[in-house]
Every structure is written in structure tokens, then in C-alpha cells.
Image (cartoon, rainbow, N blue to C red; front, side):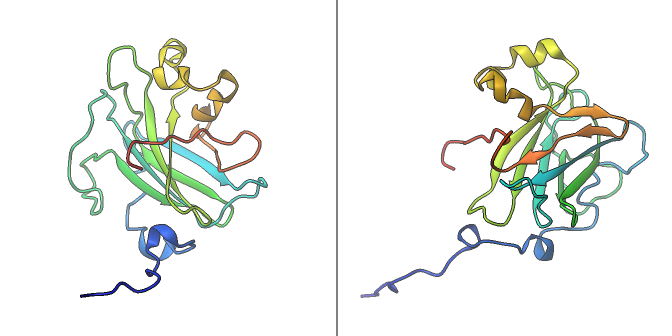
Length: 189
């Protein structure tokens, strides 16, 4: 009969970083398309802790539809070939807590739906990743009709909508505190 040790060793989901910069980034991780290529946009932002301090060692992942709204199912996200759009990207934050992606504008995945980026956040102090969405700000009617946005109190919906500026789209992520980003929970997670 085998006896289990009195305590089990921690797994990565149970330890506190920061180790993201050492193992998870890869060449081309933040460039879903080459910067400056036709249709390329910039999605960027800053990740803040509960005190409003930028987090220098967070990791952001995005999944998105392509511009016509198709859910991309192409391999190659970890070894970019320079022309296949996979819809997945990963960016670690810089010392000032900023992140950025070169990507394409996602299309709505169904008629009348609001277009969005699915966003995952890994950061020190988190025992597991966080899920959220970054909606495009352009289609006000689609945003008003979106079922997920309608399920969020109106005063908090803005934390899920990116803003446009001269550089592209900006989506800041606040892990706690005032204007905390709305995070999602999925069954089994």
C-alpha cells in the first residue's frame, strides 16, 4: 500500500510568479501579423495592481476572430511563419506594465454581435489566470445588444471596452481596486 506524503508539492497554478518572462514568451508571440502589414492594428495597454501601480511581470494572451468574424483554427501560433493568421498572441509586460500586440481588427462572430478580443491575464499574486474581454468600441448598437455586456452592471461595462487613439486600440487591465476590470468565470475553472 502506498502512502501519500502529508503535503503535496505545489504546481505552477499554486505558486506565485514572477516566472512568466523566463518560460512563456517566444519569438513573434505578440505579432499576430507583422507590424505595418496591410490591415495591421495595435492593441496595447497597461496592467495595474490594486494600488494602481503598473505590473512589470504580467503576461497577456489574446484569442480573436479574423476580420470577417471566422474563428481561426490554424496551427502555428508558437512558430510564426509570417503569413498565417492564427488568432492567438502572447505578450509580456514591460517594466512600466505596458503590453502590445500587432494584430488585425476582429470581426463579429455572428450577425449583430459585438467584436471582441478574448483576453487572459497571468500575473504575480494570482493563483490562476483571469479571463476577460476587450470589446471594440465602434459598433454602439452591437455593444448595447451584447448578452455578456448586458449581464454586467452598466457602471462596470466600460472596463470591457477598448478605446481608440492615434496608436490604435487601448485596453488597460486593472486587477483590483477602483475601476477593476470585469473578469469572467467559466464552468470547471
